[in-house]
Length: 68
Image 1: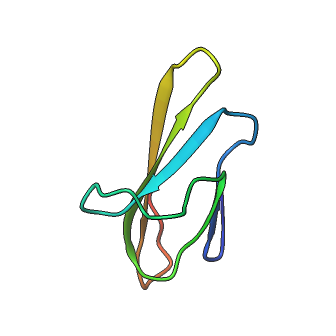
Image 2: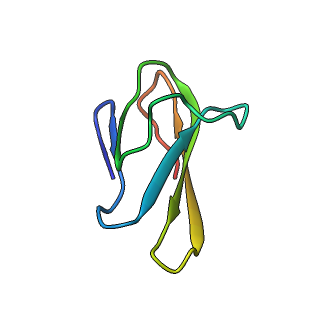
């Protein structure tokens, strides 16, 4: 879900990590909510209690035309 510059994924996973457009983990961004400060491509990786991993990607641009 996106609300302005706030990206949010479902709460309840055992681990979260947000990544920048180069695929690098964003330091300290390990919760279900991420506040975007720059346009670009971001993705989040979530892990459930069974160790299964899923990812989601969002592209933020200056036209507010966001693609999931």
